[in-house]
Image 1 (cartoon, one colour):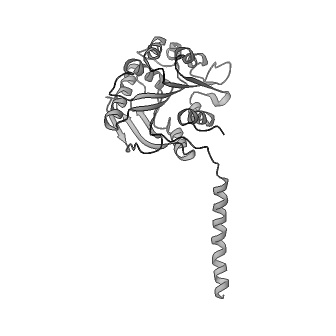
Image 2 (cartoon, helix red, strand yellow):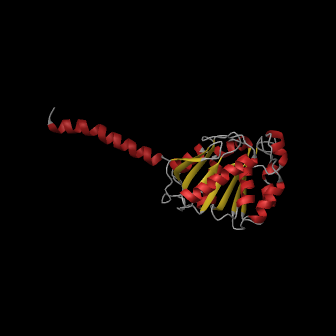
Image 3 (cartoon, helix red, strand yellow):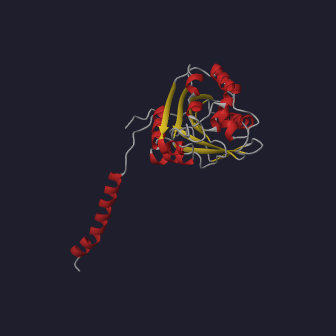
Length: 271
């Protein structure tokens, strides 16, 4: 085999491979770009949740869409001690922080205390002054209790934007589903609305599977949408996910919810 033929023999598979890679890259879906901020977003799971509850959404925001940066996991032990996993870097684009309750079946009062410890940690250790929060189910109700009692503490971050996903604001949902010492009371939500800065913006995501379920299977549509009345003095948007995609656990694994959150938090343009 002469030199020219040998070069051709070697180059053909290399060129073919390069062309295939280029085609694969071109076929990859492209997503609108997010506005870059240094305001971190905290993710708080619901009753019986774990690191996987918001793990998928965080991974999508980071790896799939490129809207944020996976930053840190905060593990809250039974005694309320906050242990960081990973290092928070305030210079990264839209940092994403996952909160994990080791004791994940506690009542609202206890979980609100856990959130208080997390917020204190973020302010003291990471020097975070302002934060967004995405929360699901009981995590949102516990956050409501925390904010009703601690919203104006200068040693904790101010909440900039709030996303409630399948969060019940009516006591009947908890009475049926969770044996809580602290029943979810509408009055605590009203207290939060009276004390929370009017600039704090809300995105309420609710599910409606069918008429029989009356909501997402765990939280009624009426209960989730009480926020429209309770927080009517704040900027507020709602999204109702209907059909089989609107199940309680499916709400945080939904592309349309991802897109709505991206637009709400980081001004991601609609496709």
